[in-house]
Amino acid sequence: MFAFITHYALLLVLLASSFFLFSLFIFLHQLRLRQTQQLKQLRLQQLGKLREIIAGLQRHRGLSNGLLSGDASLQGDLDATRRKLDQQIQEAKKRVNSHQDSWNNLFDHWSRLREGRIQQAENNLAQHHLIIRNSIFLLQDLAINLDLTGEDSNLAFLTCIWQDVIQAAEWAGQARALGTGIAAAHKSSAEQRIRLRFLYHKIQELSGQAFATLQQSDLGRSFSLGRCQASVNQFLHCIEQDLLADEEPKTSARVYFQQATQAIDQLFSLVDSSLEALQTSART
Image 1: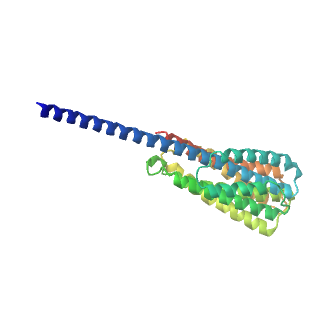
Image 2: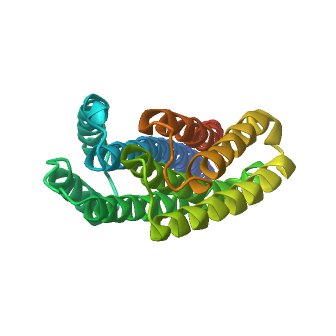
Image 3: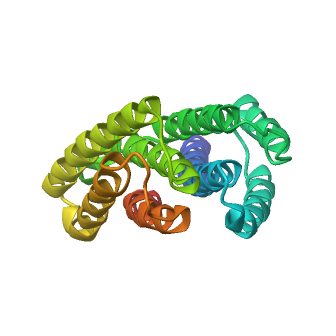
């Protein structure tokens, strides 16, 4: 009788231990899932903030080049853009939890660039190209580390966003900066026109690839592809007619800048839609 009770008690202890271990496993598994989701959300916030910073740096590049090329009316817009970038940089500093060296390099470069001490237009463009290029590399690294394409087949289009769309926006940003300078000076050199023609073809090529890829994606309907494509085509037409066809362009720097900005904003809207899709996926 005693042996039976002992055996029964031991069985209860084993069952209780098994239940405890199983409950602990479930708890730890759910905790890891929550931590993973929180990390994904934090990195998505980093991506979103970095996308804003890149767009701001591109805008700062175009306005500063127009100012250095002779259009003093752009000073107010440049100052406002600089203040907004300062705010975005401060917000980004609160969210950094990876790629610390790359972020610090970005913060340090901006702290020097924002002073506006560069007086040569070519050097100003070169420094902006460098900080934007490194920022794009950082964005792509963050996106790769966050890659959810293996978890959700609907997100297979993301490679196109991080590569073709982002780079098309950067080529368009370079064309905006160069063209704004040309429009401000009301003249262009052969070298500038060759470079602008190169940018024209790059925008056309990469945006075309992106539109074709996204149209075939499962989320293609959620993108405003028609509106984006129309804005890009209008910008390309503006480059062709207003700058490349005339060595002494008559269009104003502000009008050209605004036309370019519409196209760039539309390209970045595709990035924003992708980030929204990622946020939805990360919550599930």
